[in-house]
Image (cartoon, helix red, strand yellow):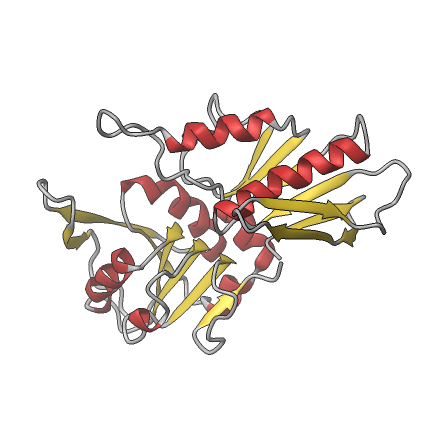
Length: 275
């Protein structure tokens, strides 16, 4: 279940969610929900549009059953954040649409993980808290254990530099920056440049917020393999992995992901943060 209700920060109360033949989503709160004062948190691991609608319907059901209740939302992956501006006339501003929908629910607080765009943080979602990649990794502790060799953190592009610098503090290593070379006519990635000398037997750790199909990271890993006799590792906060995991094998030695979209991941190759 992608949408869960936690009451008073501890107890999970299931609800029923179903889809009518016409495609509409509906929810019904469990009869086991307490009748006394509650402090509900909705944890929404949104994977598709039905999950978005289910989140809003659960919110409405809570407001109706418990008038005056304050509802908090934890939404690790903020949907549509990657479309954070209008690139061409006639396009929708998808991130702003989602921001407006979230704000309309009147949540007492909204927590997201490693937000892709500052648009949702600055003049965006009301009462929002962004949990940084640094905070997630520091609490998890997995990378410090499996990447102890003063790993060098890699920012795959300019937009990832601040995140990489923060994470490097955990590993006591340095930071190198990479750049994507794109075809100006098509926008396709045609090459990658890494601003680094050979680092000997140290590990490279690529750090970013989202992995979709993974080509950015596989192309980058090819260059990094030439610059170390150690390992090439990847950390992403949100792993969509739309092209599967096999595309990384032979290029990336291990993947760490805080919020994994696939229900199952190969444990010999992928570490998923406990939820």
